[in-house]
Length: 256
Image (cartoon, rainbow, N blue to C red):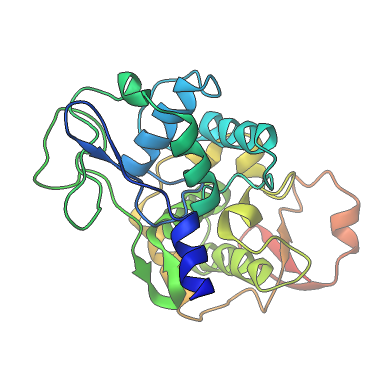
């Protein structure tokens, strides 16, 4: 009974505006790289409170990430950049009247709570952006997208095996107690990936990058269980050369 009561207390409460439309987040944890209606609602609520100043576009990028962290700081929460049940609940309670910041035509969900019309234009029959669903290994589509962005930004032009190896390094870090325990946490850990530092993480990945991610999730690890890799022609850190090397694939040396 206590567990049920606790669950009911932390779930976001659906909110109805004066027009009769219901606004409520879905149950997914919203994180950097996410797209769609949940992100639109998140951005609109944060903008209403003054934490977010960019366009409400349904894409969880850097501006949204820092807005989330600032909200978490101001509301005394754990600062991790992830939008889970606790933050959703606080945000819903604090942002009454946020609808003025929603793009025209947005703000409705279907009976299953999935996003309708991620960008604009008012189409409500089919979601125009992917929602988070489970994939092999329990990863979400947001995880897949973010990893594909990282693989494309870090290893496009490398042999396919090398692209799978980069994806495998991300997963190996996820399994290690030394690194963050979420895909977004691993990828956006400070100074972890060059593609994040130079912005190439936001390039649109190709199908090969996504396929490499799926192959890595399904168990292929060409890296030999590596948790680091580097390009010997461009590496500027002396520390990375001290890591035990496993193998080289293309231009990248993979190491422990």
